[in-house]
Image 1 (cartoon, rainbow over the protein chains, first blue to last red):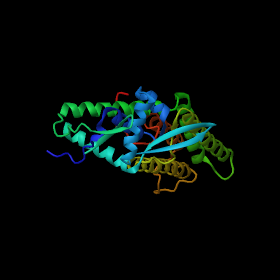
Image 2: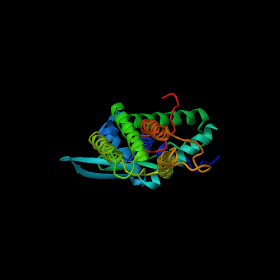
Image 3: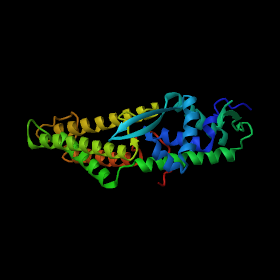
Image 4: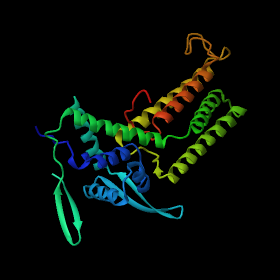
Amino acid sequence: MTNSRFNALIHAPNRLHICAMLSASGELEFKLLREQLDVSDSVLSKHIKSLEEAGYVAVAKRRDFGHRRTWLSLTSAGRVAYTEHVNELREMVG
Amino acid sequence: MYYTTFHIGNCIGRVKENMYSDQMSSAEAQAALATIEKAESETIASLRPPLWLITMISLLCGIFTFSFAVTEGENHWALGAWLSGIAVVLLVLFWMYSARLLGVRAPVLPPSGSGKIFLALQALFYAFVLFVGRGATLWGRPETRLEGAFPIADLPLAPYIAAVIVSLSVAYLTYKYPTNEWVQQDASK
């Protein structure tokens, strides 16, 4: 059996959680994601970097209200990959 | 196939990601879907405006609908429509500002295609209720209603019904879908 739409990069638990949160919203701040996932900065950075390298997540650093903040969002490629992955999981469940 | 790169000192290594999709059971897939649903529900809950804000926005939308339906020329209801419309815009801007402080940037248009379709359907629904409400109010009066034409009976309650429909649907949709993204949710929540 070949699962062409199954995405191993997205399927890792924390990355799946990140994609699910980003798909349900527009842009989320790095700090908020870290608190929701209850992981360290370095762990989240590593996951974000791998998703960013795959072109699934866009990272934007902006100065808001006098603070430098990092905003994360799903790219259109990331949204497609995530949707296909979820559909594949639904097909597996039947 | 995906690899994760890691760094130890000056050394760079790569490990193969766990590729168990072929061996994945339906129970594992179900567990993954449960994780996704939980994450999406938590995100929706964290983005949901407080109940007082939802109540105010929905009531003001109802007032706007009623005022729009009964406005004639420059009467007081025209002012009511303007004021309630401006108040709704200000409250939505306040909500977006406070969400941004908490680390969430709500886009004006949802980024996904399904979200855009969902928003367009909502816009069509509200436009339909607004214009049918106004039409039924204007043409449903005994002094203006034409025999045999729409509406077929006097409709003194038309603006009230339109206002209640808009108010309740705004409250429900803002509570269940605060980001306008079409996310499947547990019906019990």
